[in-house]
Amino acid sequence: MTHNGTQKMNQPLNQVRCIVNTCEYYGQGNHCLASKIEVQPQNAQNSDQTACATFMPKG
Ligand code: SF4
Image 1 (cartoon, rainbow, N blue to C red):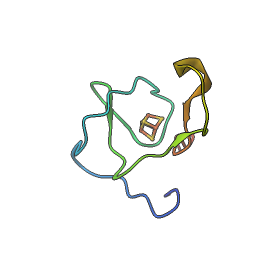
Image 2 (cartoon, rainbow, N blue to C red):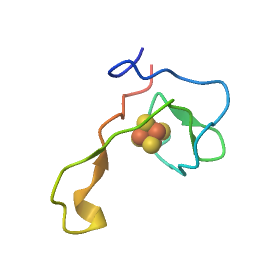
Image 3 (cartoon, protein in one colour):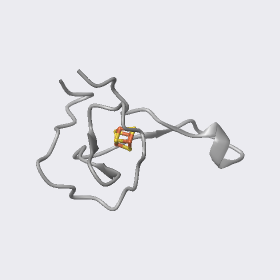
Image 4 (spheres, protein in one colour):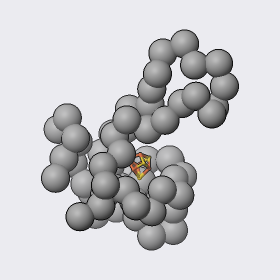
């Protein structure tokens, strides 16, 4: 399964720390295995208003 052409990698290739262990791209040790991620939305005022749009439910 992919999101907008995002591939699931065997190794964490980015420096993103993510604890969302219900995500298809989540890797043990709180790594993100997505080849790229997208964070939304525009004009957010604080971190609570931002979210990873690449999230996909595991399975
Ligand atoms: S795609 Fe987003 S939610 Fe999923 S592991 Fe990566 S950073 Fe976390």
